[in-house]
Image (cartoon, rainbow, N blue to C red; front, side, top):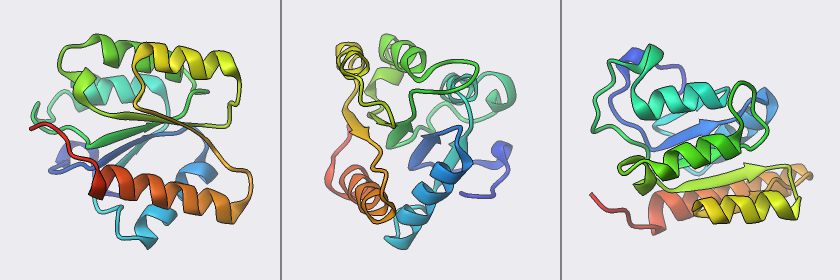
Length: 152
């Protein structure tokens, strides 16, 4: 869905919440290379992620039944932090069913523990090396898009 207007979203596999354009582009490139980026929406901050999931702001017209198969969530985000996004989504009866994989440069134990305490489904530290980063994203996409089974 890369390049699709926000109000014309018909299907969504991945909600990518990433403020760093380079990291977002690399994620989308790795997913596309493996045929896993057909329906991806990239949002650049935590507030926009919450707007999408809760159908507020510019996403108010999106159908309620449209939800991603997985949210790839950075922790260090402008406006609303990734931890706060995770907290709000996992506290909501409907949103908590959406798997969330934290994809972050943070290797701090307190971030890892807090994310799991809040109910994150996966925590991945972004590899620094290009090839490792691309492989990690491809494996992550393969797991959440192909292998993992979600409730209806």
